[in-house]
View 1 (tube, rainbow over the protein chains, first blue to last red):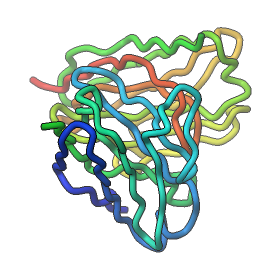
View 2 (tube, rainbow over the protein chains, first blue to last red):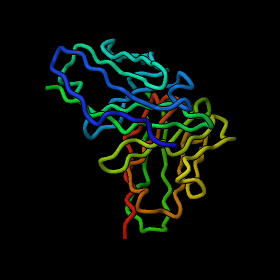
View 3 (cartoon, each protein chain N blue to C red):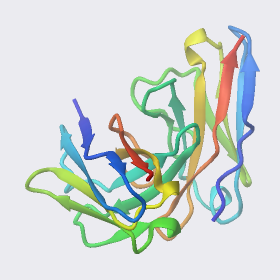
View 4 (cartoon, one colour):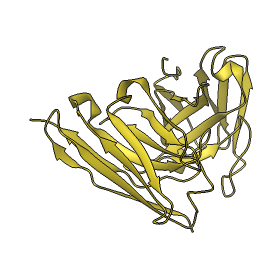
Length: 110
Length: 116
């Protein structure tokens, strides 16, 4: 199975909104609602930001929201802060107890 | 507070073996799916293996099937990953994580370097 497809980079100015995409197939993203998003700050372990497409773990600001349409999932970050600058990875359950990750998007806050 | 602490990484020659450990506190591994995720230097994340809460079923990414073995010791609340027949492409930081379809908790990672 191939990794999910994410654009390598994205950017936005403080206060703006940015949407990151994650494209899979009908066998993974399009097949279930087990899409997650992770934020990885430089040199740190990833942190879960969104799970089951739209849910936020406790402590994650509501500026982060998730959605899905067909085989593509999206993460929207509203009211960008400089501290949001990080790598963002999506993942999806792909059946047969396998999980696929995307290649990651580097978000730059200009 | 949930903590996952990996250990056991290091430098190993191609064809060699390592055993990674993950000590868990604040969460009973007998109640949760647990997994290993790795990240090659400068690259993205890759799911490696997971294990059912009761330890009866284990699953692996194709590239490590037959070479890596995931296990757990509920008495020690710890998880392990035995890495055999290591290859250069196995060089990565290995993270211990909780959960099956979403990984709520992560360790800090342990670096495995496969090189002669």
